[in-house]
Image (cartoon, rainbow, N blue to C red):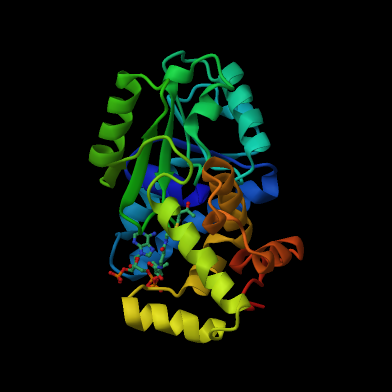
Length: 272
Ligand code: CAA
């Protein structure tokens, strides 16, 4: 999602530095922004001049140190708590401005845990975008108990006024609003498939045509990433101990097999 978030911020006129784990991934992130903005131009959502100015705002790097002068960092690494904690510890050391805001695009992990990995938890907040970020209007803003009123106000204004997204303020509990609802729904669909109630195609068709959702649960799960859903399910289960949140065996087996959805070419469906 990082490239989508970068595109949204660059389009709003921010100088954006995208940091990836290596130079090949950094270049791939840039190419995703080129492709996404080209699609926006083709659909009449952006002029070629706006595409040019958006791309001119984006720099890519494979060095976390290049974030040192930032005023706002939005972390969007995989949904693995140990990795996120390491990133927040490093950001705390390297981001120079003591008032800089350190935000996470986490889908489910409580923000207080990430704030506690820094010496400035008052500047740590959740800014949760939805995939694809340039298209989806919602952003959940999540203050931790330790987040200051100033941080919350700056982030709220930035997201709603500057990025023109609709903000929903969420309490700092696992899954926030949307994933607290959709992840148990997606896992219920997997359990329904395991129980042989209907085929994955028919479950998807039922949800698309019976509920008018743009994607059925298996299409959406593949789109989000099965590893992401699996990790969110584990975080929800750890927080609430509700069996409805526990990842079902079929989801676990697909993830263990590397079938993580569209990004790997295979999930509930094949994209090869
Ligand atoms: N900037 C602005 N607009 C863009 C754009 C860009 N870079 N790229 C595409 N668009 C516009 C297109 O112009 C198009 O607009 P119109 O319909 O007005 O023409 C619209 O976005 C859709 O684009 P596409 O035609 O390329 O795609 P589509 O019609 O096949 O829809 C989809 C694709 C938007 C993904 C749709 O299937 C959908 O809404 N699916 C559900 C997505 C969803 O639920 N996301 C949330 C997942 S949960 C999550 O993300 C949270 C988490 O933590 C896990």
